[in-house]
Length: 316
Image (tube, rainbow, N blue to C red; front, side):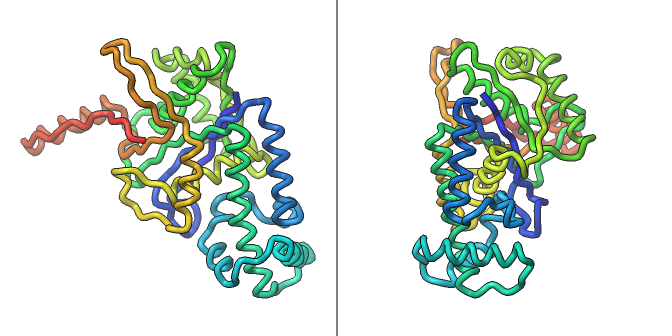
């Protein structure tokens, strides 16, 4: 099983996204090539060529930015054959470095982008893609120590639960969008310590290979899918506690990604009950419980007022 991870960050681009979303998509090895081929076919269906040939990016912030919807609304829905003709004309002008598409070409391109993302999510569903996400508040406090952040640990926990439902010989490979080399090394070291030096991590290494792979996202289709899903969650999906506004036009995309979300029930031997496990979780504090407890007691000593130590709560 392959687990592709990418992010949608509040600092990413001029829009200033509401949250920091770490998103993972699980794809079976037997489905991966069929998934890639289906998406490549969809690119030709909607754009007449691969997006990279048109110097555009297969990323959420490029395909679903506000301008895309504004351009799409500038004309009535265009029939698919006519829309494709206009889109190809528009993209070929770009390849020739000619300026000035027509109003209808811009509208057709916006409509094609929106329709294409709908098709990508449909293809994901058809190929049994499963989504996971940690949604982190922009002002979430970060841990002082150099260990694996809670949003990563949460994704690995849910991925482990998902793998437990597969064949007993199934193992998970983690694939990240490559970033600055030093940061890749830091994350790799943190993962190694988590999976080799903690009781929980060692248990999960029975299913998840602790050493990650790093790839260039613009050359790796499944990582680009994770990017699109992260963007749709960031702008189009909410649960109680998430107070930042959505973009209304992206709410249908957020719901489509939610339909791919991992969900299961786990049995508790302690009390004999089942409890729900959600593939998405909102996190407003990235610090471990011990560090939060120390902060709580420091506040108590300085103010003399006792608050309530926050508990880990399942939100999905």
